[in-house]
Amino acid sequence: MSIRLYNTLTKSVEVVQPIAADGSVTFYSCGPTVYDDAHIGNFRSFLNADVLRRALELHGHSVRHVMNITDVGHMTEDADADGGGEDKMAVAGRRIAEAKKSGKLPADAEIDPTNPYAIASFYAERFLEDARHLGLKVAIEERTSPELMPRPTRCVPQMIALVESLIARGHAYVAKDGVVYFSVQSFPEYGRLSGNTLDALREGEGGRISAEHQAVKRHPADFMLWKPDPSHLMRWPSPWGEGYPGWHLECSAMAKMLLGEEIDLHSGGEDNIFPHHECEVAQSCCASGQRFFARAWFHTRHLQVEGEKMSKSKGNFFTARDLFAKGVTPAALRLELVRTHYRTNSNFTLQGLRDCQRMIDRWAAARAVVFDRTRDESQGAGDGPLQRALVEFREAVGDDLNIARAIAVLNTAISEPGAGDALTELAALDAMNSVLGVFERNAPLASEASDDLATKVEVLLEARRAARAARDFAASDRVRDELAAMGVRIKDGPQGTTWERAV
Image 1 (cartoon, helix red, strand yellow):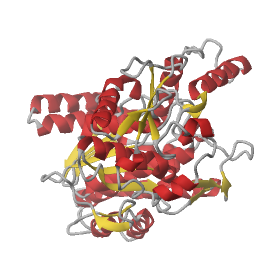
Image 2: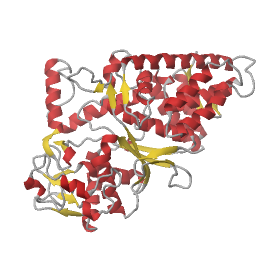
Image 3: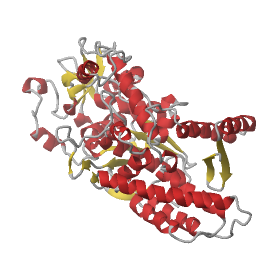
């Protein structure tokens, strides 16, 4: 059974056809820029990418998923891709200093508001905590495979090499102001992803960028690859002077480094389509000579809160940790953010959170009943409602990630009388949860500690799967013993490994 997905590049729903003959999928997601806490609008995009990855795995694909954590202090006018305005890390530093002064952060918090690397590290760790609570698999895997969430400050040599390649191929140039620009006219397909044309972009010449600045560029849409700036808070030596990389350059370099020159999937929010992803396509294809950078592009639309644009001034601006502190379970927040189709603007509401919590509680109660049946002498026989539902559930998530229909299928199945083989029914329910990812997160957080039981168990189960794949059964047994010592019982079934807290 295949997955059909809307591809922003072709503007059509297509079957996902992996490049690799073995069906494995390479997937890159634009992650957070860590100069503040990620808000729920950010997490809607990240969680939809996670659900897509899980849906691919349910359909039998092995997925190598990479998500960057951007820790370079870009400028407040980076929308122009020319680094104008003020350094965002400087802005973040002032905010942190004010938070310490007001008591919102402890005065002895281990973060120096004048050190951009410390600021980035502080917010990166907070993001990872939130992401693990919400079940982002790539963030869980980051504990043992940190390369899956690369940070640009650690990949500058790869970026410099990419710029050198573009200059050598005639796709980039050093302007009179010393900045290295990509020449959009050297790539005839520039604009294919977003629908923009070079003529339309020329008509929009100027904007927030001065005429003097535009004069050094060959075309108004040419974008920065490297900017020499010895005053920038974060800067590195390069053939073009000490400075920093362009915003778009980073993802292309890291995707190539970790996934290859041509990848299967790339995701982000719809605001990333232009200029960010358009520029990624141009520089990546021109550096590699490949027809494609990513075969398919997956974009999540915007999130509103209670029918309005999210805004701090309106009091409807939420980070994930804001809601956790109010007692919202990660499971309810996760479901509320993914249950509306990713290509539809979503309206987040507190009532919606409550509805999601009630729904998850019903599913959890149904699972408890099925689990109890597995310990009865008479466990039933044949296909039950959950096993039959799994077929429809797969079809729903394979139909352009139709999570609403998948949820409806599950709700119908749990309302039917218990029947069928209990072990098979339990495995079917857990297979559906492997996409929704809610059972293991259905409790309020006691603290902001990231080492919750579910996170520990998932990390250990990943290690056990790797050991079994390598036929290292001694290592696999050691993981099982460690889980048992934690009070966790695991069971290998036809749909994979499931786990329960031991009773």
